[in-house]
Image (cartoon, rainbow, N blue to C red; front, side):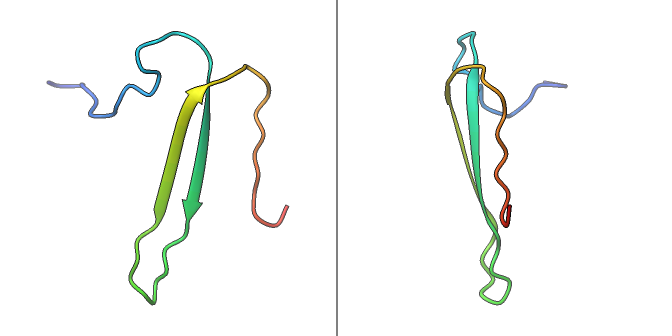
Length: 56
């Protein structure tokens, strides 16, 4: 269908607040491995966002 997304429903069809955690692994160019993303979604509170960056 036009305009329909192939993305999954990350909220599992329930209303509420959710937390999203993303882990990223850089590709190893010499070894030819791709980047890796691990995305986790789970019910959580509405507290503020915390962003952790390498070297901070």
